[in-house]
Length: 176
Ligand code: RP5
Image (cartoon, rainbow, N blue to C red; front, side, top):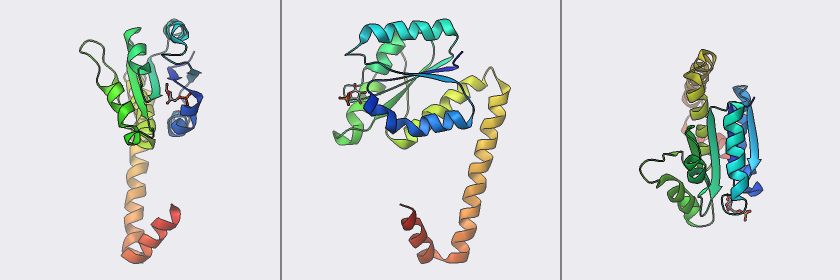
């Protein structure tokens, strides 16, 4: 059984969601991924959401770009929590996707994360938080994740103090 169902509008969306898959793998969460479009294959979207429900999935993540109706359409067919990821596009950096997903009518919510890498990672973390409401092991893992994040930031500040601002900036730029 997959705990999370992930649906994307196009295969071109998949590389942009690496952070989402990576985070779910880090938390050892099980997921099913499908490429079905709200516009090109609407019947397959509906069939898949029913399959996910029957299989016992607890959260759905839906990603789409441009006229990004997929998360909203998915939400209209299920009462499972739906997290929407707006895919970056060439139009205003993906603001088109963001507004298409976030502007849901009252009654059918989609929990919308931000555009790009941060959104993909946060969608996974939000999904794990939802799973953590029924599985305390995930709560513990989320706390550990934050502890490690905080430790990393503290360590970086120690390096900054040692190296001085210009050396540190050079090192940050070299990472890009
Ligand atoms: C949306 O159209 C997809 O989610 C994708 O972000 C965008 C472009 O799709 P392709 O033309 O690359 O298949 O439905």
